[in-house]
Length: 201
Image (tube, rainbow, N blue to C red; front, side, top):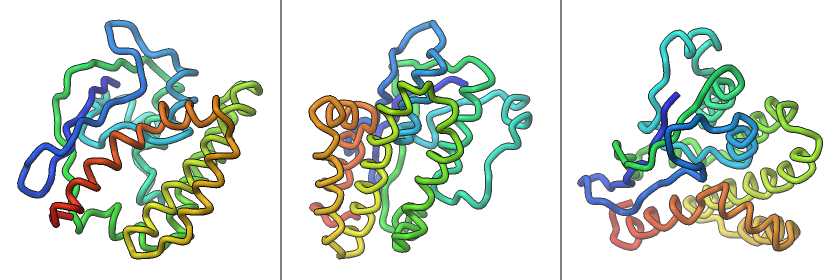
């Protein structure tokens, strides 16, 4: 699989930001353990960004329909375990944000939305070393809370944001730093806020 950053755009194709991956770019494959550790925290790959070999895709069974929100992350984690993945620094695609997207409409069910994240952690945690499991899983749980809280906020429910903030604070300085770097939350949230403030979201 080959990946690259994506421009985030609105309904009118105006650029709102750049969605990058927390990975080293270049001609060498990404170490599998690095990719797995970071993807378990948060899927940082814009859906139009990866190019995947057909035989690799078919060998792992493709996308799972039950995972309406996290099927792509599940796919990337499976691919990371069977072959080489490369990251290139040049943006070659755009990711459109709009009010009718599956992410926005589907995330209105907070329990199911949170469960989509937990399935990924439960399914792929055994790919982490014991040391990585101890360090990464709390960060992943914190980000699941944040994703759920942000989805609830989009629907006008702001109480979960307090719980999410508490989850992040319990990670400590090192965990918080890892959370922000792995999740690329700033890259993903600010463009949406720009669209929301401009009345385009």
